[in-house]
Image (tube, rainbow, N blue to C red):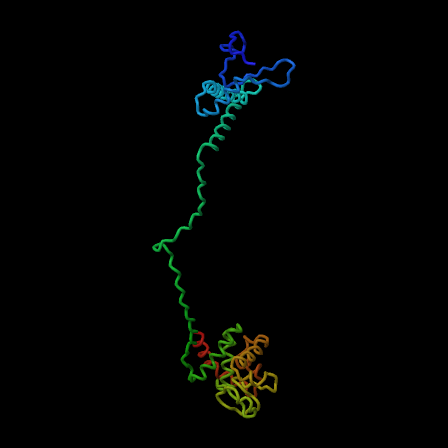
Length: 296
């Protein structure tokens, strides 16, 4: 129960707990479980409903006091969080707290900068002035023409056909590695046997199917050396070739022991086995002149 007239009452006017009329007075007698509200408080409350915007000095003072207490509480919480045990912080701990505070402030208060977009560096474009021109296609080189065989002027009273046959004998012998003496013997033998013409045989009509320059009738003898197919010198087709006929003759000559020291007639007769073997020697000087002209 509120006592408005007793100044000595602890809850009266001017008491240590002086409050405005809008503060309810609650008297809790001993042994009573429910509080009793004063009639003055009710009147104050009911009357305040008609003045919702009237100034209330008591409430203003309480709001200011409450704000001050809250600020002090925040300061206290800050200090308690920094040093909960009341111990002094080390410099490392303080630096870590400061870094965290700065990070929190940056994450909350600062405007976030968008990350710079990653762009690929474009490949440098070649300048038209520095562009390497495409290589020009190489001109196809024309194959060099084969050198024409040297035309050797006939010597020793021979015509061109005879000189060409002599040249075939010399060159074939050189390819075989036969020395000059063997070449002279071969040319002299062909002069005696065929007069350096490539003969076909009237007895062997087949021989006339191949290139030839004359026709003879000495049995089946054919070619420059009048070699007989029937005695094992070779077949008709091959013996009609000047190069093959020369190989056959020189191969047989080199098979004779000491042939290089024999007289030309003896060496030729050993190969040809002719009925007129002594006639080969008469052609030695002319054969030597022809070989020298070809090898010059």
